[in-house]
Image (cartoon, rainbow, N blue to C red; front, side):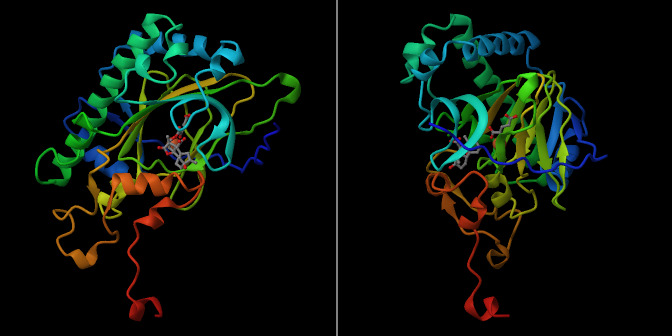
Length: 326
Ligand SMILES: C=C1C[C@]23C[C@@]1(O)CC[C@H]2[C@@]12CC[C@H](O)[C@@](C)(C(=O)O1)[C@H]2[C@@H]3C(=O)O
Ligand SMILES: O=C(O)CCC(=O)C(=O)O
Ligand SMILES: [Fe+2]
């Protein structure tokens, strides 16, 4: 089957600096909130994740993506979990990508893909499990800092959503293969979109490709840094802060010379959790920009949309008729 790839949109070089937050800095909470308000995106250093865990996982994932196509296909198609190639999601989106999407609550060896992953070395499976734990720790730490800075009550309101065993989080490993010199041109690896969850924690090798969209619509390239993590604000956090934090649009353009490998942990709430603006941040219900939906409702409607669709519209309150005509 032939899959048509979309033309590449332009990205202006920009002097915008990505905020860098040292998680051990006493001022980190303030810096995180500022970055979430201004950009919906920041880089994390001094995160405490063992560098050798990152190295092992990277090496093993690289070996997985180098397996024969017929073997990798046995771990797919992604529906949504499993191995996927080119197709992203169920609604016709495509990119120059291969990936593994995993439910963070299910052990790698007890998925439908287990037959394939059983053939990967134990260190791969163990590293994936340890990495998921580390990402849960880091994402709940970031959410705790946001809670403290914004004085969100009750304590743990945001971080608990990720810490509990019912948290609907997932882990994605994306592989964007380099191109042969003769066909060298940039293509869309992962089209523009916002992430639906609370926050996403991304780590990649030193190959560029990730871009974020500023509030004025300008796309800027994010310089890669294999030893740091990047935090992306998702739709759910935008709703809970009543739009004070913005979920940032992002995309990946494939680099012609070197392959890019990224791992993203999507920190999501339990399926039964009701998502709505937090009353401690917005005392008057009339000021709520969004209505309430459970995460399960948002997710299932969101999975009927295309990657670049504006999913937050599902949450938006209808204006009363007398106002919508003004
Ligand atoms: C086109 C789609 C892929 C996606 C599900 C969706 O219908 C719309 C949201 C997409 C997204 C973007 C962020 C994450 O990569 C992802 C796993 C998620 O939670 O929402 C993907 C979904 C996917 O690839 O299944
Ligand atoms: O692969 C990347 O660097 C980012 C991909 C992404 O945005 C996603 O998987 O949601
Ligand atoms: Fe994303």
